Image 1 (cartoon, rainbow, N blue to C red):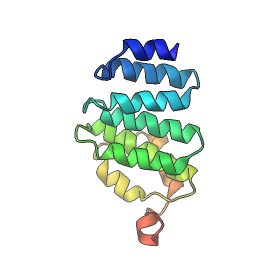
Image 2 (cartoon, rainbow, N blue to C red):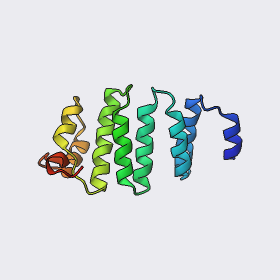
Image 3 (cartoon, rainbow, N blue to C red):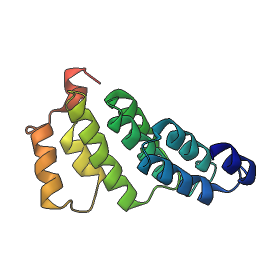
Length: 140
């Protein structure tokens, strides 16, 4: 199946590669999904969302450090929107929590200039209630 799809889809078709990544992720074919998202990153408009999906896959695989790197890469995407930035900071905080790291919540809140819903905000407070973060402790 995958070989037939690979023959019919060009590397320039980022929409199809992104959709394949979603389908593979839902089927539990996480390495294949990750590869499709990496190909879909050829479209700068999708780069942030692809990094988000790659980070989620790493987190699902129990690799929080790789997830953190993916989310940080997503935050460096040139076409990132404010909504994507807020979501990426949230997922980054979740990956840090899963990896036993403390995320600088104050910095996260400053970067996401619009409000976060109460459920996410309470989760962020649990990650680092005092907002000290790893930078002050030299952890990250």
